[in-house]
Image 1 (tube, chains in turn yellow, cyan):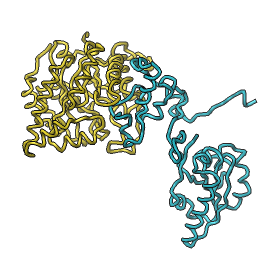
Image 2 (tube, one colour; image 1 turned 120 degrees about the horizontal axis):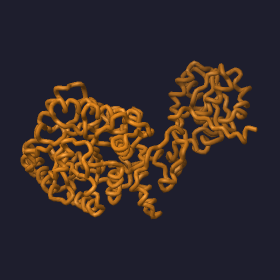
Image 3 (tube, chains in turn blue, cyan; image 1 turned 90 degrees about the vertical axis):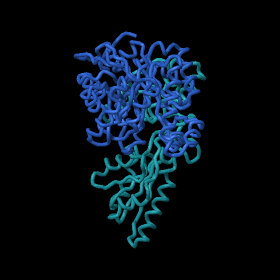
Image 4 (cartoon, one colour; image 1 turned 45 degrees about the horizontal axis):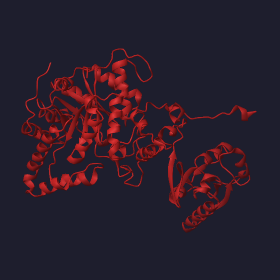
Length: 310
Length: 223
C-alpha cells in the first residue's frame, strides 16, 4: 500500500507496527477545557485520536473544531464525518476545510439514525452513505475531482478510514460490505466494539480468505466494560452488539467496587487475543467517558510506548 | 396508492371552532381504499363533529359529500352549490384534495381532515406500509426489485448498516423489516450477490423533491 496522506497513523501502519487509536468525544457544549482535559490523558498513548461527529445523533461541538484543538495540543486527530446531517455540498466543503487545517485522517460514516438522538424531530439528510463518502474523498484526493467532476484546487491529502460491524446481520454479508468499502477507498477499518470473540474470529477468517487484510489495515474495536450493569445495558439495548454471558458473569462475580478493574482486565485480554489474530493491524480503543483509564489499559496490553516513525 | 390516516377529531374541531356550517368532502380514490376518506368515513366524521358540537351546546350543520376524485378539477365542481353558504370545507382526501378545493374557491377556508402518510400498500387488514418515495428515477432494478430509498431508514444505497439485526431495522423497535436484509436474500436467490461488491455511486436527487416542486407534462396528451 503506497503512502497517501503521510499521517502519523498511516506511517505507523506502513512501518509494520500494530497501531493504536483512541477515541475522544467532544462535549455537549462549548467547554473547550473539558475536551482538552479528556484528550490530555490520551497524549502519547494513541498514534491518533478519533473525534466523533455528533455520535448517537446527539449535538456536540463539531468534529472539525475538536480535531483542530487536538492538533494544537500536538496530537493527531482522526476526524469522523457522518452523512446523516450534511449533503454532498457540505461534506465536500468540510473535507477541503479539514485538509486545509492540517487534518490528515478521515473516518467516513453514515452515522446513527437521528431518531435515537436528542433531536428526534430533526430532518435527516443521507444524500450520500458512508461508502459513497469514501469514494468521494478518494476521488478528491487521487483524481482531484469533486462529485460533480469539478477540479479541486489543492487535493485534500487524507488517510481514509471506515467502520465495520462484524456483529450485525446478515453475518455472511459483512465481509462483502467490507470489500465494498475497500473498493470505494477505505484504507483502514475500525470495527464496532468486539465482545463476541468467536464471531469476530470467523469474520477475520473470511476477510483473510477474501484477501481484504492485504488491501487495508483492520483495527479491532475494544470498549472496556465499566460494570456488569453497562454490559447488560449494551447487550439489551445496542442492536448488533453481542456481549457474551461469560463476561457478564465475570463482572458479576466480583464486588461492585472491583468491577471496573475486572472490566479492564477483560479488555486487556481481548486486546491481546485480537493482536494474535491474522490480519489485525491495530487496536481502536473506545473508552467511553473513561479516557483517564486508557494509559493503564494500553500499558498492560504492551502497547506503550508508541513507535516513533518518520 | 396514497395512504392517509384520520386526524384526531379534537384537532379538526379546533380548526373549525368558529364555523356554524361546513361541508365534509371525501374522495373515492386512494383514501377510500385505505379506509380513511371514503363515503363511509365522511359519514362517521360528520356524525362525530355534529355530536361533539351538540354536546358543547354549539350546534354544527354538516353537509356530506364524496367526490369521484379530489385530484381532478372537474370532480370538485359538484361542490359548487353545497359550499355557497358554508363557513369551511373539511376535506378528507389526501392532501392533494384540499388544495384542489382551495384552487376552486379562493375565498373559502379549507381544512385537512387527514394526515397523508406515504405511498404504499396494504400488508394485511388494517396495516399499510410505505414502498415508494417518488424520487422520480426508479432504481429498484438494481436492488432486486426492492426500494432502499423508501424502505431503509437511512436511504442507504450500500446497505445494510450495523443496525440490522435478525432481519429487522433498529429504527421502529423491531416492527420494520431491514430492506437491505431482504435485498441481500433476494440477490442471493437470484444468484446476483456479486452486484453488492461494487459501490453503488451517487443518486441524482434532482428528479426528487430536491429539484423543486415537480410538474409532469405529456405533450401527446395535451393536443
